Length: 121
Length: 166
Image (cartoon, rainbow over all chains, first blue to last red; front, side, top):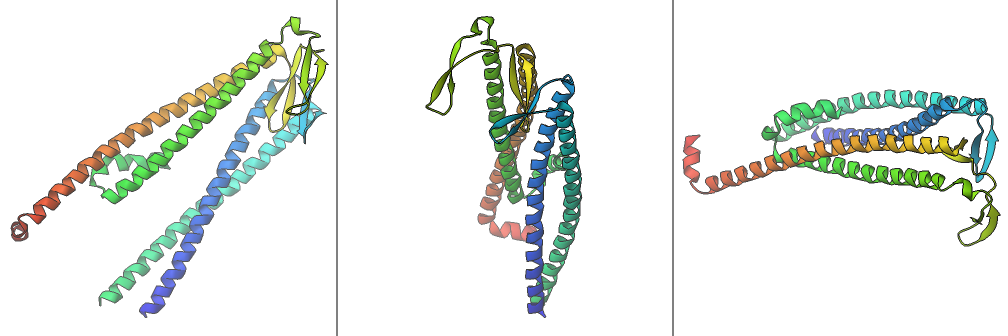
């Protein structure tokens, strides 16, 4: 009985650690996305200040290639949209993971209590 | 999340066990460290923008048609002539470069410097706040430690007296 529960506790702890790991990588991704979002927003802001006939270049490898301003604006807008969507997705997953973590920790606590009760009896 | 957490924490910091206080201390330390590195990074960014601005101001009308040496690599230069001193190409981020007049570019860097300055101020403020709470935490920990030591001394001394009192 006790051995079975001990094994279960081990399994649950492993699952909990896995959740924690995924959680921290997600937080990292979110941070990266946030900085990307900020940089793109700054570029977007800068583009809005430009006249339509302004000369815009895009860095491709080591070469600056001239690009039409509307095209560049559309590009940045699309990127912003994508990053925002990605942020939302990550945010949802973070919330979900937080809930799962909480549930698991409660389960583990219960198991520990059970084992303690058995070993004391 | 941390903002809502810190409130109840500060209220009952004194009731918390030392172990937990130690954890909070480590957390505060890493936060302060992170803020300090962010601060130096932001200062570096600001210095870079200042340098760019100064470079633009060195493009005076007299520099028209001046010969310059253009670096092709770290150690190889070819002579060239400044043919256009009215406009420069500015890196606006994410691989995009915009051609601007020197005045516009100067204004651009000025606004960047201000923007970074504002952020560095914010970072400094939060760093100071964190440092203050860190000092407070250290004080409480010190207090708890001495209290614990006193208790231990009392227990090791009149052991029977405490037993009977209970």
